[in-house]
Length: 332
Ligand code: NAD
Image 1: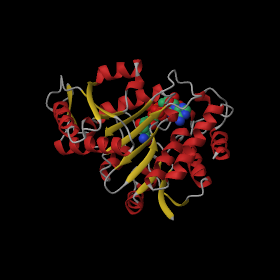
Image 2 (image 1 turned 90 degrees about the vertical axis):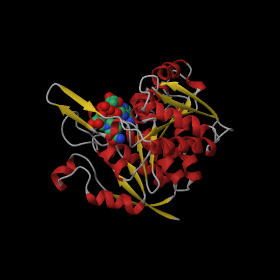
Image 3 (image 1 turned 45 degrees about the vertical axis):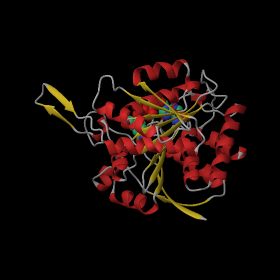
Image 4 (image 1 turned 90 degrees about the horizontal axis):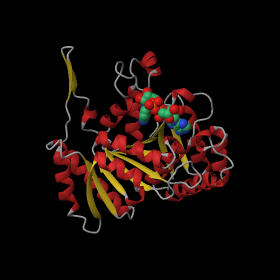
């Protein structure tokens, strides 16, 4: 079966990791027609917007995209292309697995955590303004519907993937309305899934517990901001940003991307680790029903990292992005 997928290289180091991931997917033999589309700062000059209509139309038509990271200016300039895409397609579930691959520089050897981050609400709704020049205000918007669908997604994910426990992460002791609503809905929905253990944790304590005993955690479901932070913490537990993939899932579309940014400090140097992008592509293949190819990629990545002969610098080696991808292809 042929699949058509929108391919967004991104900017900075994005095109390097996306080229590597594309090559690995092609080596599995899965029949994919790539439709290349662009987003990011370079598009402003060409199209007057960082997220051109053609790119939106391509994702809408194909329903699936593999995307490289896109630079977002800090403080001023255009709003995040990523946030805009997630809002445009209502990609409410951000799925971020952090799994130990023996052979990385991680200090832990048994982490297997999936962070499920709400992707459309919370402080990321961007409802903020200046109050004169003396203060600034941001509104944390959390809806019952938003809580229900992300928490249900987390439980359904746990059920489907054979996972045992869901932990809701919040700060309901302080934000009694917003995070209080998230926790209340989590407790309600947990009752519908008696076969899955449920507990909850305040976000600060969660961070400490993750560093001390990550093996005790399974699926974490978080409002947007905590999910962003906690998933980077989990990436640190398994060896860094170069290793962690993600999926942004909605009812009508899905965008797969590494969780790391555009890494401008190493762009063009052929030393960025493409593992996160390759594993994002594996998540994409699983979503397309190509589970065998997805598993083959994961096994090949695991083998290359475990063997340890061809590793990028962040994993303690000296291989280039392309050499690592070629080693994965050889191991397929
Ligand atoms: P970053 O993830 O780009 O980089 C942080 C550090 O980790 C850098 O030193 C970088 O070299 C290193 N690093 C990241 N990925 C790596 C990899 N695969 N292999 C080896 N080293 C890696 O974070 P940042 O510097 O805070 O952000 C840069 C830009 O990316 C910003 O404009 C930010 O807004 C954007 N960003 C985009 C996305 C996205 O498109 N989904 C996500 C996060 C950040």
